[in-house]
Amino acid sequence: MHRPCPLDALKRKITLKLVLNENLPFRIVWNAGIILALATLAALSINYLRHDRLPLLPLNPGMGGSSAADAEKEIFVSLAEAKDLFFSQAAVFIDARPDDMYRLGHIRGAVSLPWDDFENRFGAISASIPLDSKIITYCDGEGCDLSHELALALLGQGYKDVMILSNGWSLWQQENLPID
Image 1 (cartoon, rainbow, N blue to C red):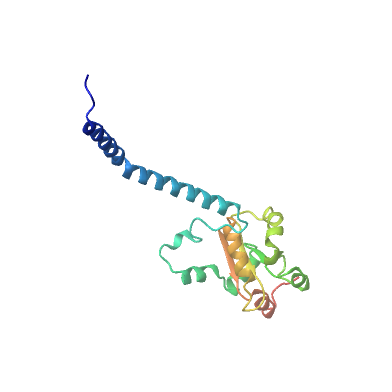
Image 2 (cartoon, rainbow, N blue to C red):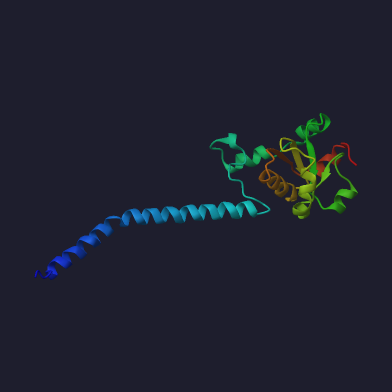
């Protein structure tokens, strides 16, 4: 009878470990890829469920390597341009101020969408404003940031042509332009 040599058993164990370890780099890369894919899927899902989704693409895709300061300049509209768009009825004006301020006076024909109540009112208002509409948001005062926040939220909801009339209500009144 032939007895197995202890060295033969040891050789088989070492050979088996070497074969398993040859696959180790592949397994590490494979597991890392799966973790990365799951993390990306989770992040995209969470972003989709957010009410203020983060844009997955640049806000102004045609800008190339422009700086953030250039992007800010492009989103603001001058009073002269806003006035031209108003009289040619080429833009929808959206008032970002609270309802009580809107009721006291607003740009003629402007839609009230207070930034503070965006989540509750956006659905109803968005139904009447197509995504390809030119939109101008405004509020009151040079320090007022409501129109900026509203413009960014509208861009995040898929509107492509959104601009901000900084200090819009005050400037509009100073020029004696049409108000309601």
